[in-house]
Image (cartoon, rainbow, N blue to C red; front, side, top):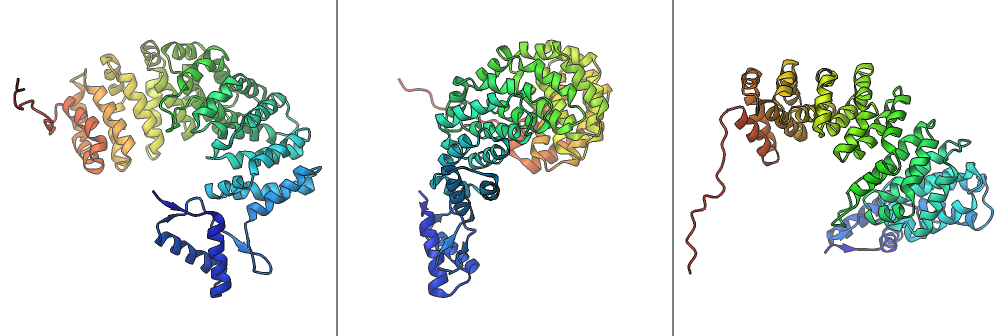
Amino acid sequence: MAKVVSQETFDSVVLENVLEFDMDIEDAINDAIKEFESQGVHLGTIVKNMHLSEDKQNIIHDILVALEKIKCAADGSPSESDISAPLATFSAECKVSVAHRVLANKNNAYEVLIKLIKKVQGDPALLAPSVKAMGALMEQNSDILTLEGIELLLDLLKDWTTRNEESRVPEYLGRWSTECCLKHERNRQTMVTAGSLGILVAFLKGQKSNSKAIRTTSKAIRAFTLDDDMRQEYGKAHEHARLLVEEHGLIPLCLEMIKDWLQESDTASELLSTVSKLCVRAEYCQEAVDHDALIVINDILVSFPDHASLNKQSMTFLKTLVGNDKVKAEAMKTGSPQLIIAALAKHQAIPGVCEAACSAISFLALRVSDHAKQLMQLGAGQAIVQAMKVHSNQKQLQKLGCMAIRNLVSRVPENQQMFIEYNVEDVIHAALENHGESVKDVAQAALRDLDLKVNLVEQWRGTGHEISR
């Protein structure tokens, strides 16, 4: 188990280096770091950027100085001149590292900010930086959330559902909501019990003209559909997605908003990512298609061929939808395959787009020989092999490329020769050489279905001793 020290102990050693050994502050910090690390002390939660007081007798942390000013304002009658600069400094310092946020919280920053936000709740100009500071404090630090904080956050979300006199407040409320839920299943479930899903969906709808609020709120909603808390054996991501679809009608809302924000790729991408996370059942995929999801995807790929992020999210969404076989058949008739292959060719230099395209092609070809034939005729095979050649160092792309190749040939042997002409064997062996075990299974499966030489190792032959009776 790693040894740890408190911030006070670290600071005292730094100060001792300055006072006793006449070091400047930078040398004193570096010496203290070396001393503790040589003793096996973990310094991950220690703030290491600091400076001396004017009399050089004390260590000063800017985040604690700012916090003290915020506390004084919260205890009195806060004004913009009192808290504007301290809040800006506090937020910036929280962004530096987790250690800064831990130090702030050890000095009651969360309680101070809750008190301040309640006091300035009626003043949008003061509320915006206060909520921003709370979001900054809680980044990767969501254990500090309390029931009082949840109630305050949800009250603010309800109050600002349709308000727009200060556009930063909705944006920062969305960010605070996100930080409450990321990698924290208990917080998610507590917030769902408190009614957060309906409140956030209403907030998203009410802020449909505020692009920054849409982006942060989309991320907040999406956080409820994640299963990312390693401390919890089971989560409720699927149940939360079900509630968002069945009780709050989020699929048609997202698709309608995407149409309104196509000219702003970042906003449309966030909405696409959110609706993709909702399509966790075949009937939800069908609901999305019934609300023109395929038309929206194709419109994006046709109208915005240069927007890499939009192309990527559109193809990721399509891959999710075609998990439904009925939707898959419909997608093959709409022109989506041609558009995917065109996007893959146009954005060959961007790994993320190539991965999304390979994944979409793989799902479209899966278990349907007619689809595999059509995709090969459109040039899917050559585009995939070329992408794998260009990004030979991208492990995920190599895996997805091999999966797509396998699905394109497994039921259509006549596609094998076309891949061989593209030198696919060299490309797959290069993937095996570069990435080893992580791509071995899918690469060998692709070689096998291409009817090419593959070295399969027999793991166990079942030739042990008979059981003695």
